[in-house]
Every structure is written in C-alpha cells, then in structure tokens.
Image (cartoon, rainbow, N blue to C red; front, side):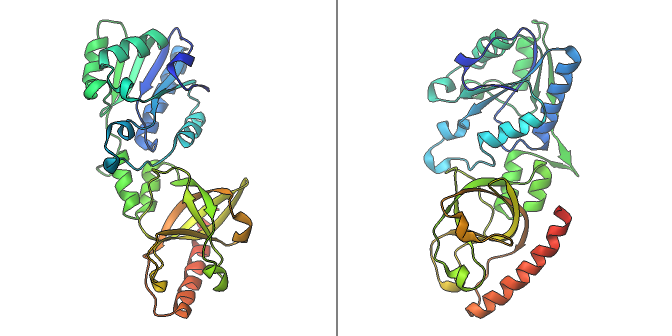
Amino acid sequence: MVIYRSLSDAVPISGSVVTMGTFDGLHRGHQEIVKQVVVNAKSKNVRSVLITFDPHPRHVLDRDSDKLSLIMNLDAKISILKKYQVDTVLIIPFTQDFSQLPAKDFLEDVVINYFHPIHVIVGYDHHFGYERGGSPEFIQSYLSDKDIQVDVVTPFTDEGVVISSSHIRKLIQSGYIRRANFELGWVYGFRAKVIHGSGRGRRMTFPTANFVPIEKDQLLPENGVYLTRGRVNGNQLYGMCNLGFRPTFGERNFVMEVHFFDLDSADLYSKEITIEFLERIRNEKKFTSEKKLIEQLTIDREHSLDLIKKYN
C-alpha cells in the first residue's frame, strides 16, 4: 500500500477506482465500501484509491467545546486499510484553508487530475467541500458526462439498525462495548501511556497500571469495570480495567487503570501499551470497606478469567 500524506506528495495515476471520506472508526459500513473499491479495481485492472483527511474536519471547524471524540486514530485506520489491500491512500491535511475549497474544485483538482478515476464509490451520507456542498447526488450529476461510473453504497444495517460512526460512538459512551465491537468489525481500543498511580492496588494484591490515552481527543467508554486485552511489547495480555473515580476511597480525579492477570504492572511505568475493551463487567460501585472491594475484585477476576476462554 502506497501512502501519501499530502497532495504534493501524490503521484498521478492513470486509471483508478476511488472512494473518499473521514471513515472514523472504519466500521462495517465503511469496510463494505472499501471492499467494493478493492474488488472493482482488481476486476478493472486499475488501482484502488482511498482519500481521507487528518485531522478530522470537525476538529478544525468546530469550537473547542464541540470537538468530537474520535473512535480511532490515523495509524489504526491505516492498519485496517492494509488488511483490505487498498493500493493507494491519500491523507489530505485538513486546514481552514482547505475547508474553503468548493466541492467542484475538489473533484476536478484532486480526484480527477490526480487519480483519473473510471469508477467512484461513496457512502450514502458522504459530504465534502466548502460548507459540505458535495454530496453523492452532486458527484453523480457532476461526473455524469465524464464517462466515470458512480456508485452510492446504501446504509449498512443489522436488524434494522443503521451502522454509523455516530451510533457506535454512543454505544461506546454508554458502555455497550460488545455491540460496539460487533458494529465496528474490530475490537475497540487505543494506545495509552502508563503513568504513576497511588499504589493502592498493589497493597490490595490487585496491582494496576494507571494510563492515559496517547490521543487527547480519544473517545472513552462509560465508567465501569471491563474485561480488557492489552498489547505490551508485542505480547498479548488479558486483564480487567476500571474507569472512574474510585468512589470507595472518596477520590475526585478520574482514573483509568488496568490489572493484568499475568504481568507485574510495576514493569510498565512510562511505557506505551494498547488497551482493547472486550466486555463490560459491571458499573463502578462504592463499597463500604476496602475488604468488600477486594471481595468484589476477586469475583470480577474469576468472571473475567472465565470470559477469556471465548477469546482464545
């Protein structure tokens, strides 16, 4: 896969099948679009091209208070695209200046001039260009006399539910992590850095690694206890993670901490890890004593160890 991180780096292509979008989460609906692009490109013996944007347009156009929490970062997006064998990915740096580009100019100056598509495939809800002036209908109309086939992929549904980034975002924020993972088509998680904690978990024989997301706008699941899978130095580890305020101890600061079953968390300080959220075990709860908390953590661990069997 060839990756261009700006338009100035891109090498023109004579013939392609193109799609475009932000693709936050690269969920099953997005994956269907990507599959169609790759299959059609191979059948026509041309290159498959995906055009995306970084940062997310809403991070540039919205006020700070309205900024969107992201399901995935750019590296995770690229990793999934590699699995689908997309030939070319163009990442356009999204800026205020770029946001002023009319939809017509984007089609002419970027899509047509650089990639000379014979086929364009987009999702039903894709919009682009100044003030979102470009739509699937606009693409069909504009390219109708240019001998370029245009296909609009209809909503991807499951049992009547339209799978979309906004719906998945709500699922994650509400703690419905198994359903979110199903709609994503991959296990939700993110890169994080391990930081110093209070050391209380070690005293309770449940040593934890406190962590913070690498991405400042990372979407977080609802507070609670989760079965998680970690990736540390190339190794896969299971554990249970708590997100919240540790109400048993009357704390006010939000904390993210993970207890790995087969690793001493003391070895992780300042390292980068990946945390994947497999299932939500329970809500965060205030216990009457540290002893009661330890009893519940023991139950949580046994339950988690039992759940792990279906992931191995």
